[in-house]
Image (cartoon, rainbow, N blue to C red):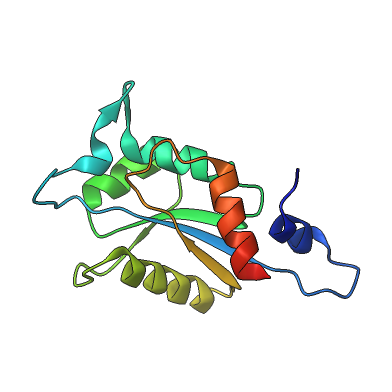
Length: 139
């Protein structure tokens, strides 16, 4: 069934404000426990491909992108046709990367009501997980 946020996003003519949902997948190359994890191959494709592809299946995302400070991850995402936003390497966590992406998109005239931080190392995430989070925050 279609999520509540997806219904609100599509309901333009009923006077209800459209809820715009941004999905951001922070992805770091540097990790002490598992360097280059977003590029680790699963079934011949990088982990970030799996996460991005599954996240994009969420019906209520108006825009989904990978947020990274690493050109290798940027290149991998561009190679499979994904959206990627480069972020400042000074950030210590994914939440800070999400905020920077939101601010950059807002400067471009793209505004969102809900931001969903999608963990880059969740290659098997399902669309309904993202839709549920967005629905809870949107209501």
